[in-house]
Length: 280
Image 1 (cartoon, one colour):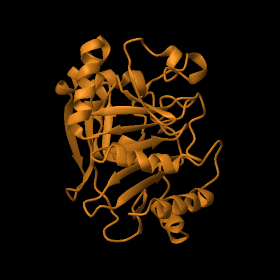
Image 2 (cartoon, helix red, strand yellow):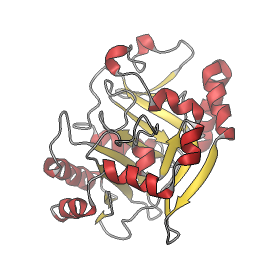
Image 3 (cartoon, one colour):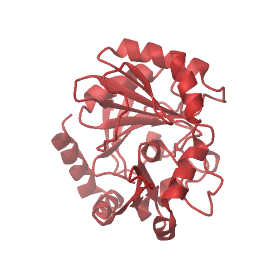
Image 4 (cartoon, rainbow, N blue to C red):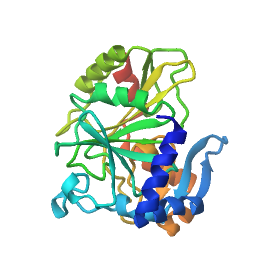
């Protein structure tokens, strides 16, 4: 699917669904503020998007019907079927092209057994970034297995290597999905054990040289200790450098030091990341 085809799908959905139309329209009013460290290095880009409060402060799954199950979705929301998945326009977008890729069955939000299909969706959306938020790492629907795909890019640290460690991420790149899958399975087998799975955010995108790149952000916490005082719940987009701030007071108040503190608090340390990478 090209980006032009994706925009046409979103346009049709917006024409039939007021909530979707309003929230995609509001993206044109999203404010941005770049935060840099003392050396001028970009730490993150703040995005003030009030509509995202529905996701950032979503009710626990036990307190609401599953909004990804067909029986509970708004009648205006249409789906494109792709194997065991449904491609849905995300009615609370962060970016101008933003889809939710929802499993057709109500199964838990786990990556085990689904990494292969995540890589395959990078072929379906070659111009987008496909991402996965763990059930305790920012997923707004931790009770229903899904991916997302959106039109944003971020800086990779992989270079011409097959595997590389960054400050808080590990990247695996190849033209061979099997290579990425096997290395990823090895990675989750050695990550700090959590229930129901090691805490992580994952993104897949195509590099300029034609390889797929899987970026994994291992996590130690779901939310920073300041959550409540500051409404920022880091997920894949935040870990990749775009910090969504639904409230204006947070958008205006977060400093470069605070943004760095938030990401560092929910991440493994650089030494822990390096040690994991050395074992792949």
